[in-house]
Image 1 (cartoon, one colour):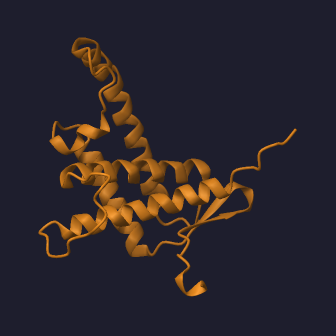
Image 2 (cartoon, rainbow, N blue to C red):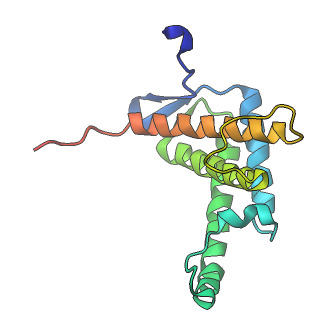
Image 3 (tube, helix red, strand yellow):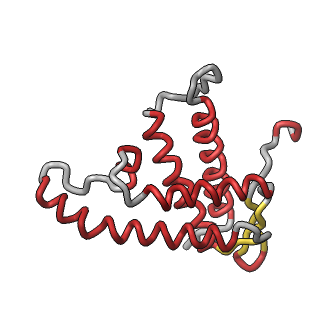
Length: 163
């Protein structure tokens, strides 16, 4: 069944590092998307709403206070993560922290694209005849990359101690 084995995008190596097995083109695309996320995250565009979820659904005043406090912190955390992607895009190896930053940004990109596409958990098929087929394919690809990161990070976790 080796014929159907998926290509591992991030391979755990010694010293808590991960070898990046993405093409240069994929890395450039990720940087460009991350920079787009950075540019639109501070706007009131509807597709960024899932980046700032409601904390108090039944208390609008309390939620507004939370949003004022949390939004700036979340924006700054995303900017820092995008900076990590910029700095490490050409790296052959990433640390746990760097790979985690990649995962956060790519997951946020999926949230934005999923919101634009109005994706639900029931949406599994890609309609190649659809005007938004490219966005659907990108959404799916980013999901594969995030899955690859989660898989790599999970593989690198220490075995639980048994007593």
